[in-house]
Image (cartoon, rainbow, N blue to C red; front, top):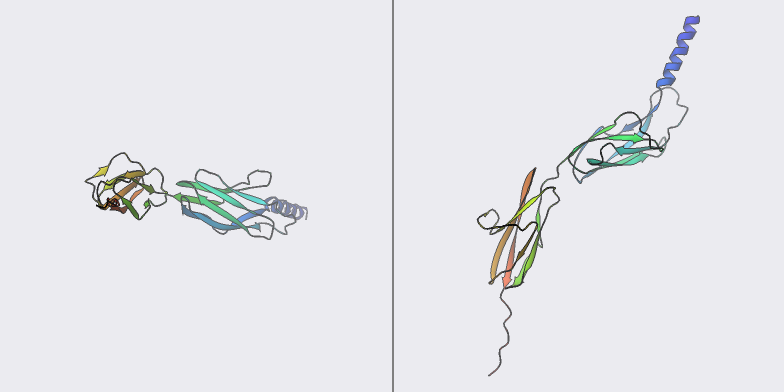
Length: 212
């Protein structure tokens, strides 16, 4: 009888020791590209018998802010919280859960994988009209990181007339009327892209001559 009482007491102590509120996320793995955003949810689950205490609000954070930014919380028991994940740079990170005092709970809860954004480039402005001798500025725009831009005079794919040392901007001054194609190549460590523009160059307005 004494052993039975002791065993029951031991079970009660063990149950209460391991019983706790834990966060439960709608996903345990999130993959997104740099600059993309994903949203998941969080709620609380009880792992023991007859919960008698409510968890304090939980705040979600990233364990690697240089890879992903995490923002969201579980406001209260019985509610569902939203957690927003924003990709910063390629790599791996985890969601951690903090108490309001800033202390971390044990464990890593959601794995985050951030991949490179696809390389894209566009030339602004996309439609150009100018006159002979008037300079016009072309700008290459790309959200990819570590991009090298190279400009060419000619149709896209024609590399016979590169414009050296121009960076993401090119200033063009046409010496004669006509149609002048230019294109830019954007090369990053994880890919490349290109865009083309055609400049319409009109002759100078004719000056009115003196009447004889």
